Amino acid sequence: MKQLNWLFLVHQVFTPNSRERVKVWRAIKKTGAVLYRNSVYVLPYSKERMEDFQWVCQQINDAKGEASVFVSRSSGEKENRALRGLFRKAREEEYGELFANAERLENRIELALKGKRLTDKWQRSLEKEARQIRESFDEIRKVDFFSDSPPRRVVRILDGIATRLASTPEQAGALPLPRYSARQFHKKVWTTREGIHIDRLGSAWLIRRFVDREARFVFAPETSLPSGAIPFDVFGAEFSHRGEDCTFETLMKAFALRDPALRQISEIIHDMDLKDHKFGRTEGDGLDAIVRALAYSSKSDARLLEAGSVILDALFAYFSKTPATRRS
Image (cartoon, rainbow, N blue to C red; front, side, top):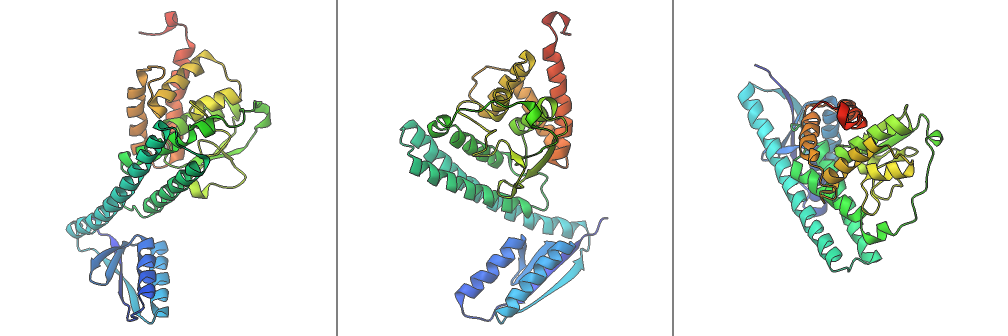
């Protein structure tokens, strides 16, 4: 029977000042702690979370309150399940609220596009709201201690919003895409949003296979991408969605990659990512299931890229063969 250590924050805030009380509540919420009992909050133990609670204690003491932190070992798996259940319920509620906000934003974007009323000012406002929702998503992910991955519906709607905003007429009418040579890119650091799926995965594979063989990749929250790295599949980046193209297609055009096998892969990725059935590639459903299974079992985006590259290498080799030499 595995026992876990848990951190408990016991506190009292005596000040009648509502601003101070809200400040304390926000500090506790930021740690990801959940309410265990009246004025008692809990976190799964780690040194970093202990420091988080100690910082909250300091804020409470500064507000003329009282607070203390202690570590307790669970009595058994039953208690572990109960405590983990509190965290899962709290995160589900937060994801649900975020999904509702994202859904409202997506509906406004669709209405604006259908009515052709998406002015520059309105688009900037929608982009700002999209960034705020994405930042909230990143914050929830940081404190989602007991889930391997966020709800699929949340990831899909956030990616859908990013795609729609990146392919609006204003973006499509941006400056023409320059042409680059792979010789300009050697041992570069490339970066994109964490939680990669087919377009970011395929783009990273394409970069390493055909552009920068010694490329290094950093997968991070969109608000924390490293400066100096080359961004891709990120709103406003050179190598991202442009017009009707997904990022994979943009990279192919930017580096003049015209291999017929790559073109077939690009069509599959386009249909999977944009879901517009432009090329009618039926392979997308199967590849989608494979990538999601790999994402579920991989412990990091780097591992997912490694595993996914094997699949894409195989697809490239298969499409490179003439039909007569393929095994049926």
